[in-house]
Length: 339
Ligand code: DTR
Image 1 (spheres, helix red, strand yellow):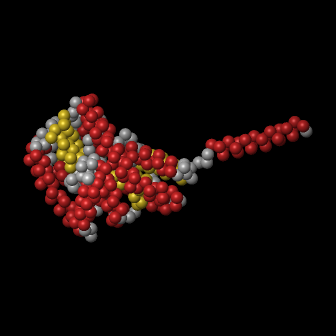
Image 2 (cartoon, rainbow, N blue to C red; image 1 turned 90 degrees about the vertical axis):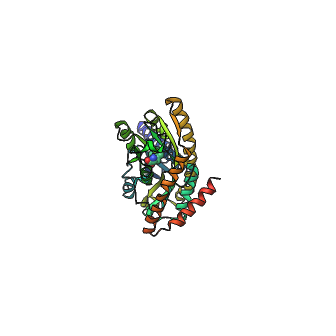
């Protein structure tokens, strides 16, 4: 009898201890979100994703847990829109230029509008989205938006004049492919994630993008010549599945909404600083050559790409978008943020 009683007391004690232990470990997150991203983890769209994850988990006191999937491990560049709409991921990163015609309003940011930094372009893009709430995003909740830094040429052979660009196969996407075409190059449109193989195989002789990829994707090893054009940026949107958004508690929605503009600015600043670091790294490691075009060629770039703005306005009008008003708002933001 005595032994039985002791065993009974011990089992009750062990049960209580196990209850205490589970409480001290902390309850599991109430909300778990999956976040898909197409480029490799060290590229800026993924760096900003990890910062967003940290801030969300911190500001919700662990109530929300974000599982990130860089490098197309959950959704690739071309199937993120559909994947997030269908709920294969709660959140996804979209480079608008990969979807020609899908974003008639926000594609304005693919035009050569004179932005000199990702910070100013990212803030202007977020302001434009918040003002117009464009219907092109009506199926999603947009958590933030940002842009690359201005685009430049990174090539295997030197492009010292616009004449050197004639017929050169260069990787780009969206309206930036049309910019290349207007300058006499042969644009080859593809997502950034497909670019390393295209460069290795010689399908393209260079790319048209922001300079940080010289480091983040080690393009400096194969593209030793960098021609400064400092023209259009590539706009991005971080989108969320509408049902996933609607299921969030109000306090979590507030955290995510408060992060919208803040994340746009953080990403812009990160991008601009990282371009500087990446160029220094590439000069040191691969002795890349920085090439400045003549004033005449830089003027020719402006003149040859100007018609793309009218083309964009015509396409916008076909979608009942007042292109002139949008361009005027973007220019006002550019002046405001580039002071
Ligand atoms: N080239 C544009 C924008 C871009 C710039 N850096 C990266 C890094 C990873 C993905 C995209 C980009 C583009 O392809 O979207």
